[in-house]
Image 1: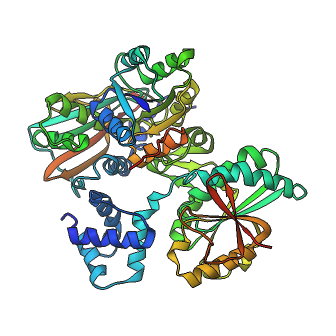
Image 2 (image 1 turned 135 degrees about the horizontal axis):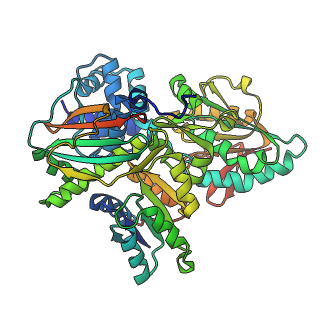
Image 3 (image 1 turned 60 degrees about the horizontal axis):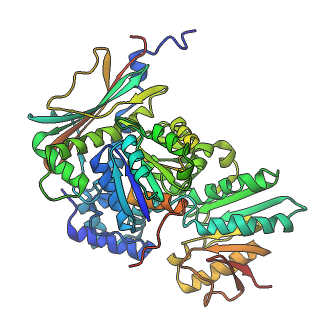
Length: 126
Length: 272
Length: 162
């Protein structure tokens, strides 16, 4: 499985991508929403995108809204991974088309459980 | 100042023995930060001194407190996923047929800990039984009154609501309260919390359609397990359902149960 | 009648208490720094000795705020290395990025405590703490020690009446 990790912090991209790779994912990274759209255009379409909210150039909410307007990207599962922690912000992200929402700070276990909710937790074979 | 390796290893071994939870090397900080309040309350100089105290002079209460401090956060919403799916997709529809005249169900969450299990059940019933006007009562019991108090408040930290709770259910059934999130009143009202020792009497609880007794039998010896399962059977209606933890079974403990597979989940039903 | 006309700064400051800041920092440490030495809260305020690095994140809106993370310059690289779980030499950019993300995570969680807060800004790094707005007050502060180095977290908030 393939995941696109979108976050303007390299440290956070490394934490998320590292955890996903341990689970067997191939990962690609993007530092903002515009860069992430470019990655999607180049294809192939990943199964999962983890998306930060506050980023330069294009923020995560705009990215999600744009992705959801494109039919070919329908099978992409989107999980917001952000420090935005208000009830209303989660509602906005879900309304824009995110499937899941993980609030920073998060533990690796929490990330795995969210993937399980999306049906995207690979069976790890030792 | 920092936790000594001896103290850390002793805590890991204790937690592993009591809860089957493995704390790997690298979790020193977790151990230290969780035990600081206990060490302070006990008047110990630091966590290592506190651990050394109980290590050299074993004391059951302190041991239990240490295990509780290190395992409470391991609880997730809809823990393990599959049992709750089996409950929603198979058990609830079956109850809808068999309880159609009374239109009410009673569920027992028998080791409810900090409340994630009974509240997950209450949330899971919203779109089915509750939406159709049925009555559902969830009785949640635990040995620890401290844990019950937290469960009753229904207030959880951000790290806790991050654990296994689908975001659409978080926004629908929880309200932010300062640093924490609180389960909404309509869900809280469905759950009745009560202190109970599983080795004591269940007479006051009444009869149940479903019992969740997950990840708690592991704490007891065989004779006690058998006694508990026998009495749970009497607290369960003859056509009721018992859910155990993933690693637990009635096999070889109490043979008066029939195993029914729902997907990959085993559900236990009284033999008649 | 006085409902909307603005809160005094003291009332705004009350939304964020030291306890809340300490809880956020603790949750972050549990999540990302569990493999390294704990952050030990100081019992009394303690200035971070110079030279320092400071990461800050602004909160816009009716009750603007500023969240700052102040560390000894010498400790910033090891803090970044711990977050990144990397042993090798880090570039300045890596260090700034890691510190900025720490400020970002605290900032978002603080913003959630302030009713009707606006947007969270992007992290900024400087060699001195930024000057908070003249009408703002220190709402919460946490001084802590990590591996023998001092770290200070401060939340500044302004009232709406000003």
